[in-house]
Length: 150
Image: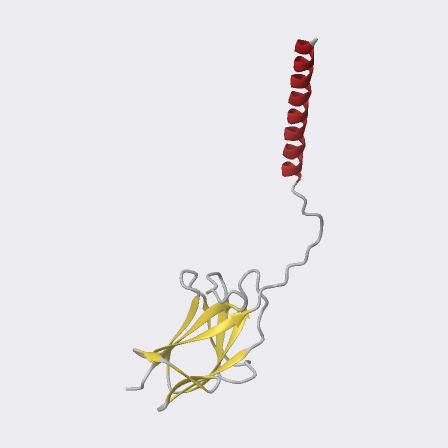
């Protein structure tokens, strides 16, 4: 009976360090060039993870196929090696919890480019109207006070 492992990829924002809970896809490959796809898995939007189940001893390569909305597609390829010494991601031992191993995969947000004027016109119009009401009310009160004095 072969020993099988489950490897989970946790998608994390590289700036905020928060888990990205969105749609994205990863592929697991036989070769380092990522030309021999074994399986493509979509994310679990509830927990921001992709799960590769029932992996046998051997070497695999995991690569992002589709980035979450608002993030850049990463070209990073993570080498996964499963052997008698444990499960390794890029030569680093991953903690094994009941044959489930998990590693973090960082994603860069797409830089936001300001493309125009972002003035809040509604707030501007409301401010002008409030100012006009205050000025008008002040003028009326001043005129009434001036008439009473005469």
